Amino acid sequence: MKTLLRMPFQSRTWREGLHALLNFPVALTGFLFAVVGLAVSGALLFLVVGLPLFALTLLVIRLYGRFERIRARYFLGLQVAEPEPLRLRPGQRGIAAWIGAVLRSNVTWRSTAYALLHLWWALFTFVTVTVLWSIGLFGLTFPAWGWTITRYGGEPGVGINVDGEGGGWIWDSPWEYALVAVAGALVMVVAAPVIRGLAVVDRLLVSTLLGRSEAAARMLQLETDRSTVVDTSAADLRRIERDLHDGAQARLVALAMELGMAKETIASDPEAASRLVNEAHGEVKLALQELRDLARGIHPAILTDRGLGPALSAVASRCRVPVAVDIELPSRPAQAIEGIAYFTASELLQNVSKHSGATRAGVDVWRVGDRLMLQVTDDGNGGADPTTGSGLAGLADRLGAVDGLLAVHSPAGGPTTVTAELPWRDRTAADVPAR
Image 1: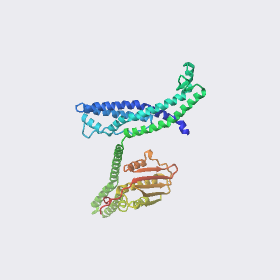
Image 2: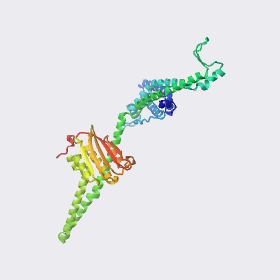
Image 3: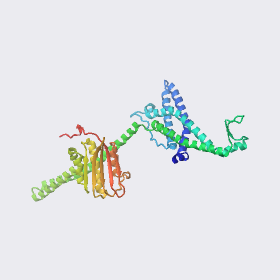
Image 4: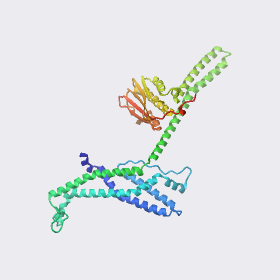
């Protein structure tokens, strides 16, 4: 009840009411331009000038839709994502390409539908708010000006249905003035939720017809995800190149030099040659270990052969704190999803080792419906925040590239719980490695 009584005095109600009052003149302007412009340009389509004029009319209507989004943002507080821009086909230029882009654009036709349909709703909102506010403000302010009619107008009071025979009702007493004010206040109270309801429909019309379409939003998301995947792949390739150059390649160069020196000294100094061969043998072992570590970083053989359970157990055994691993999966997911889950858990456990100060941690993996859930917990210091540009932010982007999610709960002082959610896709024959 208190909320209802406060509504008439809130700025939101007045902004939405003003939006409803402006609906009619704005919508009438858009409707008339759309009807006249489309009719004239449509009648001239058989002439050379007809098609460019038709496209120009549609472009102006598109700009009208942009104005309506701005108006909705200011008066209704509706943040509508800008729709996709006009897209010229690759390799096309000139007026013909521009006309084609206007005619193909889904935004153009949805803006046109809005301009043609919104007028009737705008008329309804204009009449409704005008009547309610006129009656409400008339009654609410009546005590402030009603007495002037009696004093200066030569009338006994404000009358309703007054005839020459004394019939009707004349407001001329203080209590009648107060009664009219109360009635006006009640109308204003009733008007507030009505205006809120009208604004809901306006928001729906703007977001549906003038906002970004679901297909366009999905396309933009896919483009963003593709960029993320490309950037991640490029970073991985640079890391592999750097590891090969600084690690195994350098050791193999040293090995070749030592073997060359051993070859040159084997006749003159067999003992020195033997020492060089022993050192070369040690370099071979180190190079092989680095190559194994590098291969594990690309895609570990244990993950390919045995799945998430053994692979994550192997990762957990290398963590600096004890890690309990609990894997409950009815079957193995697709290789790509399995790999993402593995590397997600690996990176999170690296964070536990390096930054958490924890004494124990846990990794849980399970399936819920068509989603693969992975959760890493630790009893460390907490304070992990993916919004600070840390590795968690990059991890969230990589998960988002496959319609995954990352949720972090890490209050100061701990504990920390990081939950990753990935789409479940069943393993197919293509995921089974050839033997």
